[in-house]
Length: 127
Image 1 (cartoon, rainbow, N blue to C red):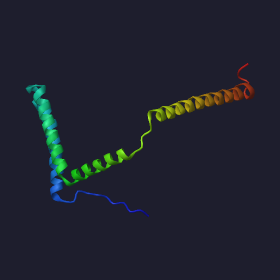
Image 2 (spheres, rainbow, N blue to C red):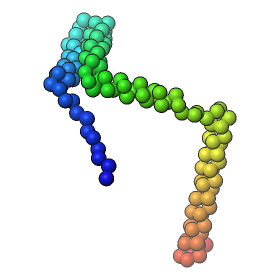
Image 3 (cartoon, rainbow, N blue to C red):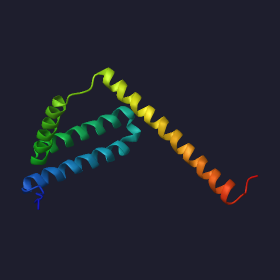
């Protein structure tokens, strides 16, 4: 049986950083609406500065560092993928479309055959 490990925020400092990041996000959103009379430039500046500050606080916490490490590893894995060439991608797309058309015709033929058997032969509703 596989064991699952759950990672949690372990230190009080990390919990405080995450709470402060949430407070910064909420304050920047509130500032955006409170400063509506100051004009859109001030509103957007307050919102963006608050969100950037929240992101910085999050990224210096341990969960933020783990997130950055995960993103870096994911980016490395993306570079390892062998992507299909344009010709291969177009061929596979063509195969999918052909399969869809064939299945649509098959289901239409099956539906019409069952309709004919049930309504014309068995029930005799259409004459």
